[in-house]
Amino acid sequence: SINATKKLSNGVEIPYLGFGVFLVNDPKECEQSVLAAIKNGYRSIDTATRYENEEFVGNAIKAAGVPREELFITTKVWVTDFGYEETKKAFRESLRKLQLDYLDLYLIHWAAPGFEETWRALEDLYEEGLVRAIGVCNFQIHHFEKLAETAKITPMLNQVETHPLFQQVELRNYLAQHDIAHEAWAPLGQGKNGLFDSPALAEIAKKHNKTVAQVILRWHLDRDTIIIPKSVHEQRIIENADLFDFALDADDIKTITSLDTNQRSFGNPDDSE
Ligand code: NAD
Image (cartoon, rainbow, N blue to C red; front, side, top):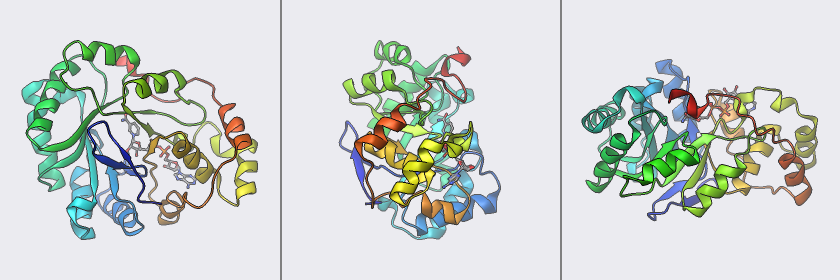
């Protein structure tokens, strides 16, 4: 169901379906989109300091009137706030903007130099009970190995670019071995590079009487990946959550697996080093 959750390594449950708000910067549009998502059953929201919309997300959360404990709110620390004290300050600022007194998930947004000290701040925020789970974004295997030299806690989740054109096969093996949850950003490949025009995906969609977007999102769920698709249109917000009444078969999975180009479409995590 839309309420399905995955258990993180510390036992905290994160909804498999969340709502992403990257590039939703207009206050009204952001508030309305998040409200539409919550109204239609989403309980998890993924924002970031970098998106400059935490305040609008906070307004929507308040307006939605859903009990706080039913929601799962994620935000991220950007590289300009890296460092131990800086991160703690950025966290407090995020809480203030979101109008919350705790977070469900706090993530390092990018594997830029200095992530070790920032991670130490996340560990302390976690131990102080201010955030229920901590993790990273855009970490490659070598970043995890570097972090392991100083970390007390292994990240509980890695949010990385993942879609049928870039399936992250090697990284997924590593994450599974270390009990780190896989969350896909750009689960729909941002609708770019012809993904929505793929005849193979269109055929699968037709077979199940679903849309290509729904087939892609279902594929993520079938491989135990958490998804945070973004849309500002209520019709699509509803469509992207209507994934729990059909199943892909072995042929479908084989076809989608064959679309992997092993090429990322967006930023390379190694570029900031
Ligand atoms: P996405 O793959 O979710 O694609 C969103 C776009 O796909 C929309 O703007 C729209 O053009 C299209 N779309 C959405 N639903 C559709 C539908 N049903 N039919 C047709 N087209 C549809 O891309 P995203 O927004 O980049 O990624 C999702 C979320 O991941 C973001 O909003 C953000 O929260 C997060 N993210 C994180 C990072 C990071 O570095 N950690 C980077 C990018 C995104």
